[in-house]
Length: 499
Ligand code: NG6
Ligand code: CA
Image 1 (cartoon, helix red, strand yellow):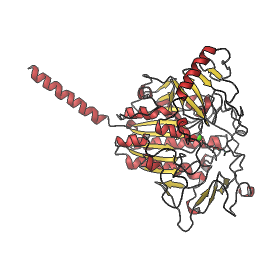
Image 2: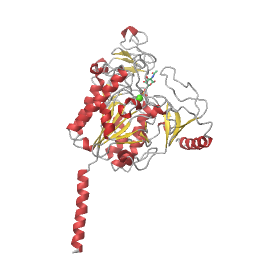
Image 3: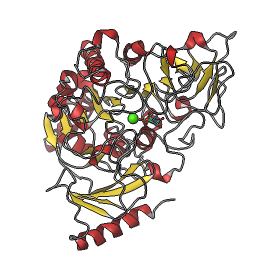
Image 4: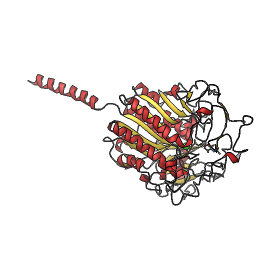
């Protein structure tokens, strides 16, 4: 009798394990990564005046982190940290990248490599900005190493940024639509003789440059860097959002019957802001606001694709931004003039390039229909934690040097949490520890001359208590001296682990 009961119990257990495996295949993972989107640019964060209904749908239907950080206040280092789980200040190359040299070592473990080991298909569509090739790039041959060599099965990218040459798409290492009889040449040091530039030929511009961005002209916009030839491959700026969306949608359709990872890396609202004509005027804030609404629409369209394919219940979507917001980042585009009451940084101080909070505190959302309940969390979490957290979610034994496994926090809002993090902005670092922020002394302008962002530089230590002073107006370094000394020691201990 008891033997047959235990046999039944064992069968039941095996059946439960089996059915659990059947009903819980590993989720698809999509990281939607915006470029320079601020904390206050998403209306679910209840800070600005823009309305972003599609991002709100993810924020209100999932986990909305109010204390989520990019690793850095600029693009390349944040992307490096996201894909490797390593602090970018450990890698001297992880600075804003232009042109040649892939920053991620091809031997290094990466998020897509880890997921590939777990039988995921891996793809990136959109901005790359982690360097390509080695030393120099011949755009007329297959460009390698690049995203394919660090773990992506499929890559449809722009190399750096929309404001840099070459203004072409690259699919799995090959420039798309390039004609062999019109080779593409790129140079970041000097112009090709006779080619027009924004500096010499302002009459050819439809968008005027404000600072930098006065080299080669494409589609009436002058860029960073010089380019010659390859004309059949040039992208259309106003169609870029639709183009990347189409590629991302195709990737999902093609891979829907197996676990897939998609890094959907949008170009908006980075400069030059070139919303499609159907979005022009939609925000009443000029191109920056219009580009955000365009990105919002793209995200809604991607969501609809997942819904119509029946994938929503089995797809974890993470949405975030690579760094904080900036208004004037090099072109006259009315971002400052038409801002109105909108607050891209929310209540926080600084923005892109800044060690103050708004440099790296960004929208951070985890959405998984039916799995993650709608909630908010004020727990500290960084994009640097995504490697370990996602590894844990897909049962990979791998972990990165600097990340934490916050998978529980990501999906339930409780569990282990992060106490401190090093923030990085253009090579400078600061410590955030619980509610405190310690910014060491740095030379240089307090306010960036052109972007007018407060950078966080000061001749002495700065210490802020975010619990009482989230706007970072009250420097307590002179009064909270015990805390100052304790945090200096913590900061030095972490920074001294630099390899
Ligand atoms: C800066 C550019 C800025 C932007 C940034 C990269 C100038 C004066 N400024 O050097 O416009 O392209 O690099 O932005 O050239 S990021 O979001 O990709 O890090
Ligand atoms: Ca950026």
